[in-house]
Amino acid sequence: MSDSKVAVGRQSSPAGRRLQHRLCAVLSVLRGITYRFFTKGYYPDAPQLVARLGVWFWVIQIGRGVLMTFGGLPVICTLRMSRMQAAIALG
Image (cartoon, rainbow, N blue to C red; front, side, top):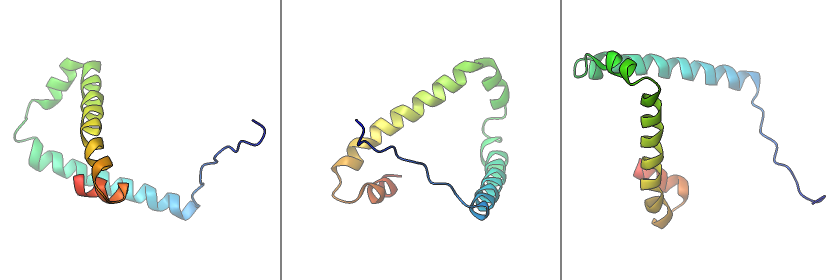
């Protein structure tokens, strides 16, 4: 056990963190635009529906994500390409 090595996370530089923050801000704006122009018109009562579901909304969302991931894993594992390329092809 004394020879085992512990993986240390890679620290990003301050410039890298600023870039990540800016990218997150841009993606947040794009998410708002997507909601306003493509979702709100079709589901005008979505905020009330989510409020009624309460914590169950997040249970349902996490469950969906897990099921979608498990549904895609066999495809990623059986394609004869790198995992990253298979994930991109599946996505």
